[in-house]
Amino acid sequence: MPTAKKRARTYDPARTRTAVLAQFGNVRKAVGTLTPEQLALPTRLGAWTVRELIAHIGMAITAIHRSLDRPPPPAQNAVILDWPFATAANSLAIADFTRTLTERHPDLDTYLADIEQTLTEHLDTNPGTRLLETNAGAMPLADYLVTRTVELVVHTDDLNAAVPGLDIPYDRQALAACTRLLADALATKAPGGSTEVRIPPYAVVQCVEGPRHTRGTPPNVVETDPLTWLRLATGRTSWQDAVEEAKITASGERSDLRGLLPIMS
Image (cartoon, rainbow, N blue to C red):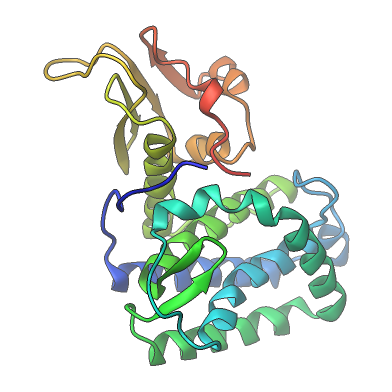
């Protein structure tokens, strides 16, 4: 697992808080419109149905509550960029917990409404500097909230892919934070300065070992849109498929990133 020696960028805690609440609100509103038939539809996440995916989204947010309800750890030992590389180790436990939640909460509207209320209460009563234990280690609440934008945005995209015509909107700040965190994770996984990855309008990172670019047009450039990027970074789509669908432009001998993707799954 790559080790993040320092956080690649800072995030405004107030804007992140607003983004998490806004995107969760977008999901909750859309879930209220789904029929039993739509809830039973398959998703691109293995055996999960739409109902199970929604239960998992709730679980990703209640992770904040569960951590804040425990005593704070004595010291911080993780940063935001440790999180993307820690998720795979917990995949089996997450799947089991998701199935349990699905059985326990047949009324998804009530389930999500309760989560939203509890989330707001916890965020109102805990400062962003409050440490909490996460699957990646101990980090401040403000930093952990950034990781929740990834959970919310990526799974919003999963819901939109599963239910024809659903079209849940993406909060701009949530999409920006998600894009930046996954782009910085790529730079952590493949440090270097030979390739420039552009994901307008939210992120530009340098990565991959080799000659460092100093001026003019970089010799190796990759550019894509935010939704394609998050699908590549999380294994929802392959590099080859994105290239064939003209979702990526790549130039230069070091611009093929397929060996570095996905970053998390």
